[in-house]
Amino acid sequence: MVGHGIADDLAGGQVRPAGEVEPALDGGQVGDVAEQIDVILTRATERREETPDAERLIDHVVAPLMYRILFRPDGLDAAYARRLVTESLGRTG
Image (tube, rainbow, N blue to C red; front, top):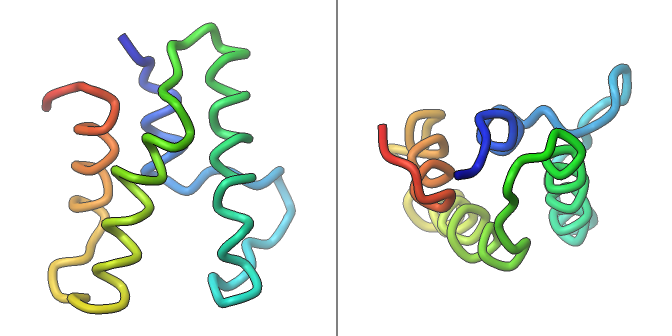
C-alpha cells in the first residue's frame, strides 16, 4: 500500500524545498509538473513507500485538475484534489 506521506505531498502541494517560492502555474511552468512529481516520488521512495508510476499521477491527478481549471472551475477545491490523489493511489477514505 502507498504510504500517507506521498498522498500528503501530492494533495498538499508540499513539493519545493523549504524557503523556495512556488511559481505561478502558467505556460512557462507546465513542464515543471513532471519534475515536481518526480521529486514527490523520490521522497516517497526514500521513506520506503510504494510509489505509483509518474504517468499514472499525471493522467489521474494532474489532467483532471487542469481540465477543471480550464473548463469547469466550479467544484475545484482541496477536497476534490485529495479525492483524485486517494483514488489514484488505490486507497479509500
